[in-house]
Length: 271
Image (cartoon, rainbow, N blue to C red; front, side, top):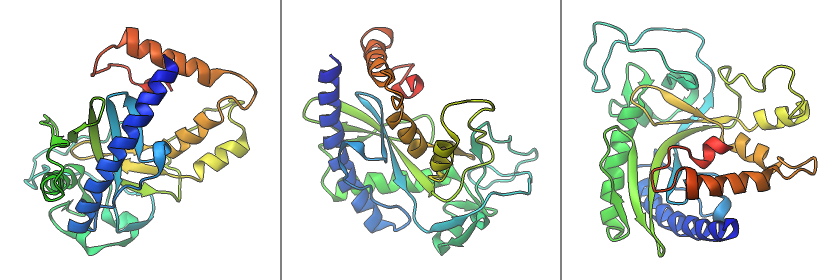
């Protein structure tokens, strides 16, 4: 069953990747702020398989380089539509943060425009509105209407249904700021007095940086997919069988604990 799952998921990833790459190339042609995903096989770092029929794909943002952490805290008094508020917007939750365009030493002029920027902040909800419009237009302009459908959503996230040869896959498309140069102070990892991973491994992983994902209205979500990938690769360096156990648990989750297309627990939770 584990081997059969691996075959089906690999096939789905290959098909979805090809379609979404075509879509994002079209989006990138229309708006240079968005970068097309690469077509690099089943181990594409932009694709995260949450369940066999549920993927998350990050779409890199261009024109923002030289990131540095913001040291000064200040309050925000605006809605995502730019209206004034009497009380401040709530603080970010853990592993979320505000993102100011001035945190980048180099930023393209497009990121200063009001379609994505309010009072110097890059606002995820506004980025997602622009992105959704581009997705809808690009599906039509590159003749993908028979394969890709934009799904209705109660939030600002962009979800599409992609038809593959075997089944339909729900894909969340997430604009992402890639920051490969530093590790955020908010991410206090690893915990003190832990023997695993080694200090050398920790430094290697932290050098890979992190991403900021547009998945909510005001705050950007910190993501460590590159670090997680390296950690999972080295899971059995001591000769253990943790990866085999993980795959069996994942199969149990999908067949017994959380059967269906909308799992409460995803493979990400098991990691």
